[in-house]
Length: 316
Image (cartoon, rainbow, N blue to C red):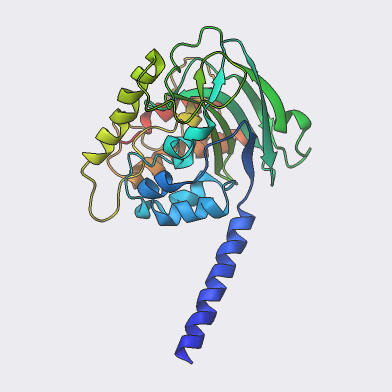
């Protein structure tokens, strides 16, 4: 009987996990080919987060943060950069675009949540955007109006003045969707690409290790640098720290360069970095509460002033 009871308990757990996974599914890039869960992600993010994404790649980042203690390599598994998905799992899907090329994109919205969204080119090493947003929506996937056609099928243009992005793994096109407090969910998807001759065809996966062209020659140091940082990082033996880079996704909205005055939205503003994940999350919560207060019409500060305070929310 104990064995039968254990079997039933395990079956119920699997069923509950499946139900939660389906309930949390909301949005994902359909094309061009995006980064997806794979062995490299599992190695740095751990089995729990990997299994979650393997079952439901459309779920929010916040769901993964609940399993942050299981992350193997917190610096390499940055959940706020492509949801922790790794380039090494996507080497066969690197796209080649030309400067000025129009790129058609398709996104699947499974469950709408009113928020804002944008698509930007992100430097993967610094987790910062290059230039400005390529396209943005101030009211995205509205629960009142429903998802519109231009929110799931749209095009972007690779900037003519885009610098870099020649070696694979240096840049990604990142789709970002954030549902404000009340829902508090973040969705990301990344398309690996290089600047080349265009035609949007995947770069050969065999090209990377062959040091015969200038692009390949510069690729080796880029891919070698990231592991060097992660393998020498001394992580705690208990709960690893959360990703150290400030979420790029929260910086992809363009706002006036203003300085936020003292505001009741922020209880204790700080100019220093956080040394633990809880402090970082509290800092981000203050920003989100500020935005929520504005949405309710109960604040004198502006959305731009709330957003400028995000620079104080960073890990040491």
